Amino acid sequence: MRTIALVTVLTGMAFGCAHRGAGERAAQRAGGPVPGGDWRKLGERWVDGAHDRDAIPVGAREGGYRRILIVVDHGPLEMYDLTVNFTDGSRYSPSTRHVFGANTRSQVIALPGARRAIRSVEFAYGNLPGHGRARAEVWAD
Figure 1 (cartoon, rainbow, N blue to C red):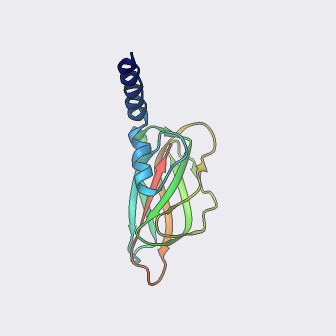
Figure 2: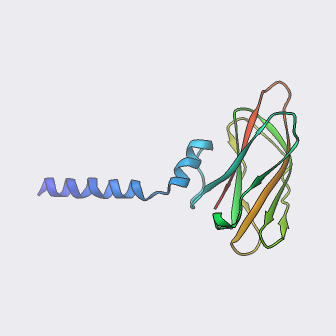
């Protein structure tokens, strides 16, 4: 009887661990725990100091989203501006002037309206002097 109970508990734990989405596990590796949801990495850009603006193309095939967050690793950076371009032609530019330390992330940024497909995410940023290159990732749920 004890063997059956033990097998049942272990099987339940295995299914519970497998249920958590791959996107959430990847987001945790990238920048720490992410609030609940099905987070997917939309893309990344290395901040090399030569460019101060970048865009991450996404496209409608990725689906619709209601919120995003920014993950920064390898070095600090200063983000001046962020614009989310939707496939319906509308844009959203939340206030994002912020200095990110290495291996940090933004708070969750709620997108206005219903779940929508994102065409691209544009941002303006710069490396902080004396700290090397940083990588900025955009995640969405």
